[in-house]
Image 1 (cartoon, rainbow, N blue to C red):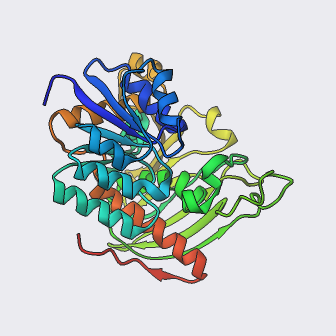
Image 2: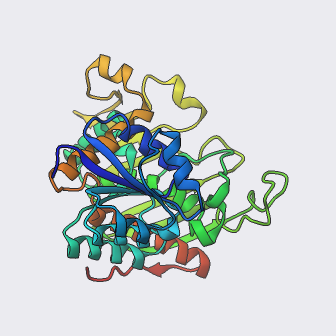
Length: 364
């Protein structure tokens, strides 16, 4: 591989700018192409960054015919993640695909199979993994300090936060808040405990705010969920309670929580979180006495005060570039996120069918 790695971008909408802003800061990256199905959009995107000599295309299939890439970002809408990622891997590029991995579980399975067949890694864009505090929480849980973790719940949610554009159209997004921000909640909860295999799920999803002109103007276009909850049974006798919302009459759906036989961790959400010494609390017993403490990120003070949450993106993009240089491994492996997608798929199906469903993951 040459000193500068050759990067292409598939999809040039809003999230693609977050990718390009980082790529343009890296001296070891050369942008060699971009594509978008909207005529002229990829050209305008490249020109905005002064890349007037870099070719633009109107499909990923056209781009891979004319451009040789070492790596590529997939920044299209959800229902095309699989098609674009597979085409790029088959053309010889390592891929960073935006979250969620795909719409259906079967699409995700085909993406993993393509990665294995081509020998090109597929990393999924979960930038919160590069947050200092998130890494601290993961390290405590993965150290075994909580004992056996038997219950996990996601928290947070938006009071008013319905996005526009393709996010509210099922033909493009597949699902609503479930896939948009719910995938983050699932990864936060599941990655900390090693992604145990999901077995069954019982879920409900609603659209009370997106379908009400009092809260959202484009009710005719809105055909996805704006609220979803689920009870997921995991391998190893672990229960996962999932909650997520784009809109509600509350500051939070609750705290994020891991309960173990020897301790617990809680991430505070809502109005009160900023009044505490830290958003993260650790609970245990020592010599028969309850011990409740606040947890800080285990990093130098100067680093913690200068690296803000949005710089999780720097970590996400830098680790991808470095992984391309070494031909892997993927910073956020698709094999792991396959279970994330299985849960999303199960929640979606259960909510549609209004009953519990089993989660069956095909062989790769």
